[in-house]
Image 1 (spheres, rainbow, N blue to C red):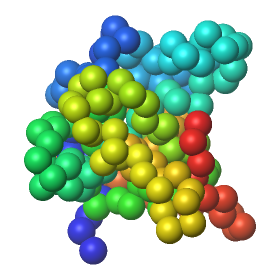
Image 2 (image 1 turned 45 degrees about the vertical axis):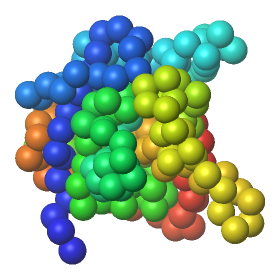
Image 3 (image 1 turned 120 degrees about the horizontal axis):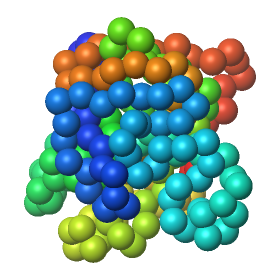
Length: 181
């Protein structure tokens, strides 16, 4: 198995779909990515704020596996790290297979607790036509399958850079599979 590693980091102060890549990002415990529009204890995603601005922010950090970018490129899409709105791009981690509550230790100090799946919306087709059907589908049972990464909250602050290792700590069993957050 390949080593689990951070391949890219990104943030954006504005509520834009894509986030520009950075040399490093700073994760702040209980808040998210310093300098990112989604930083905060309560929800920052516009649709969630409209529903109830007092909801806890379970979407402080968005992670996508670079293997998804590889698959999308193979199907004709041009996607670079950060362009699908993720803060952290990984390689060598089955992000979608992790249970709720998994701790991801990024680099020397930062810790992100996995809260659930990103629920891709129509904005993704505004970025690239046809992309939504590549990251949102149905399995044999007819259940929705979300492939556009996972969300988490910051438990321990720290700098995260491309090339940083990722250590995975699974929660106590029984494990709960990821669902949308």
